[in-house]
Image 1 (cartoon, rainbow, N blue to C red):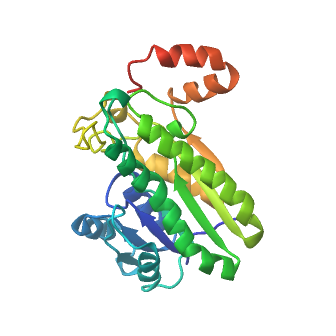
Image 2: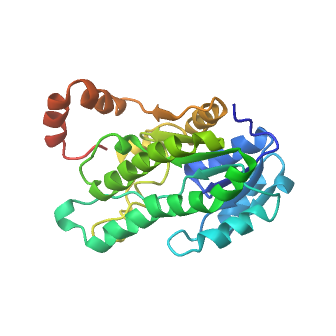
Length: 264
């Protein structure tokens, strides 16, 4: 069991949405927090929402341009070694494959796959030395299925799921636990901040995202899963039907997906 009380929890993408909610709830559980995102002012705002701001450190970080070893060292400086790493930062996509530049795919993979892998690798030696550590990877429903307008995002989240499964199989003897969280629609700015085919912001709130699960509800489910050392959880409403359909009726799933203009 992973208890958060007293542990150093490092959360990326902590300035809003699910990351913000994870930070607030972890603080209520007695964790010492290191919050990272690009926007320092927003991180300070989230710090102020936490139960004990004195146990919260702000570490501004741009995961599109960073040194993982240096970032990990700075994350450990305020309270000690990181016990729980939450790789929450990421970017989505809203563009057709035919309209999307290769550079956009590279940007998505850098932020959604390579950055989590790099941070995990950076904190791993200390976790292995202590024989204890927990890494939370923020996947998605599209870790399980592909989705129109999300070719790059689906690819990155599939890659993250595969990495997590393989790393878990390698490292469990060292006391390292991995939880892959796969949310569906959550009421955040994910679609607004998603990349279009040229790499700019989509700038539109998708209807399904706007009516999605509250971030706090999603975050609570994630922390409960971490506390129980669950390896994976799917947090989805009706969009979760696609996951089950793919598993039990793949031909029907393919038929439905081909005729979907978009899953929003």
